[in-house]
Amino acid sequence: MLRPWDDGDEPALVRHASSRAVWRNLTDRFPHPYGPEEARRWIAATREQGEPAPNLAVVFEGEAVGGVGVERKADLARLTAEVGYWLGEAFWGRGIATEALGLMTRYAFERFDFARLEAHVLDWNPASRRVLEKAGYALEGRQRAGSFKDGQLVDTWLYARLKTDRGANEETHALPP
Ligand SMILES: CC(C)(COP(=O)(O)OP(=O)(O)OC[C@H]1O[C@@H](n2cnc3c(N)ncnc32)[C@H](O)[C@@H]1OP(=O)(O)O)[C@@H](O)C(=O)NCCC(=O)NCCS
Image 1 (tube, protein in one colour):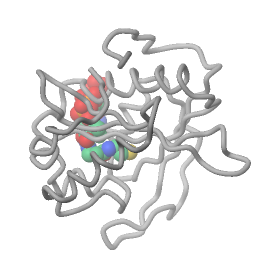
Image 2 (cartoon, protein in one colour; image 1 turned 120 degrees about the vertical axis):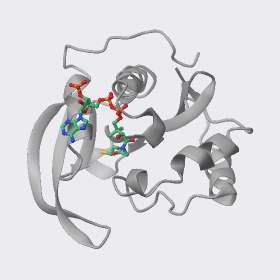
Image 3 (tube, rainbow, N blue to C red; image 1 turned 90 degrees about the horizontal axis):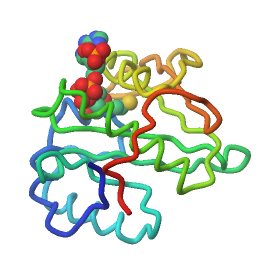
């Protein structure tokens, strides 16, 4: 299920976010190393974002094991949000990210005025491309040398799903009220 980040999630957040393999596929705004101070700051920041919460914890067997969120773009793209997600390495390969992205997609289109959700995936991350495809996102292009991460220039794959698209992952359970 997805729910807002809460005080008390800090130890789980440190345990699962503190991973080079996670960081290597995310924006440089995701801290590395990831310690208690980073966790405290993230949870406090999300609690200031108000309702509906744009950033949610991915909860598996009662523990926050990852995160999923949307961030509104600016100016002419203001009805577009970038969607992002990550899971602690111990939880990879069980379909959790696909389910979390499906839930966030539905939640974002229902609770915000977004017309479009998009995601940028680094070329070395085929698992994330697969997650997007399974959640009904369409490949729109390959941005050559679109990112500079971990000291390397890397191609970036752009995926998007529109509010008006029909299809996969119409899940309704496990969303915050
Ligand atoms: C990417 C990530 C979210 C995937 O989470 P997950 O819960 O393991 O994903 P799922 O189990 O739902 O689906 C993974 C799919 O990728 C496939 N996959 C895994 N490794 C792969 C590889 N090297 N090449 C191709 N496909 C691969 C899996 O087989 C599965 O597809 P399937 O169901 O058709 O078999 C997770 O690895 C992660 O948190 N990575 C670090 C952060 C990150 O990359 N975030 C996304 C940034 S764009």
